[in-house]
Image (cartoon, rainbow, N blue to C red; front, side, top):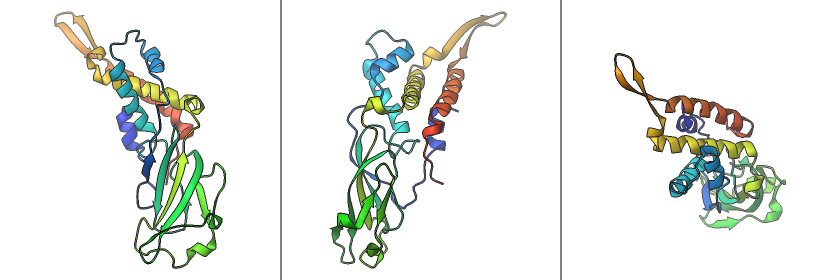
Length: 224
């Protein structure tokens, strides 16, 4: 099993009908090019563009809606959508702030809920709406009748837990080695046969996978 299998196997299920919408993407990446080059023991700049793109791909395996952690890593703004006011559980941690709660009324108009009618407890992934809002003010038969705009993510790259950053670094190295597949080919002379190629990249990937699984285990948020 490799990191791509992990991403598919850990895909999260949301406790509401519609996937959240990214409003403002993160600025930057939680792992630096220097970190990855150190891990891969690369001292030249020849593959810097490839490595930077590979880091971004690896981050996507862990971060936000497509990630396997159920977390946002660097600050970003999302809009979560619900069919009604019940169980407004936000899809990501850590939540930094909640900007607004909106709903579509029975006339089809979008309304902003008065801030006095909802509350968010600092660092909680739950927005609590008062009982006033549970009446017939929300449009029926709409999966996106209610939406919550919020920001999530650690304050900066330094605040992202070290095990997560190491997992991203290892995943980057794994993807990079897949791209540079010839790095995993070992050629040996076998008596009576001649030269034989052995693909050693799979063994490296298994070891990497086990390390990644252990690193991210305490940080995964999974919906049952």
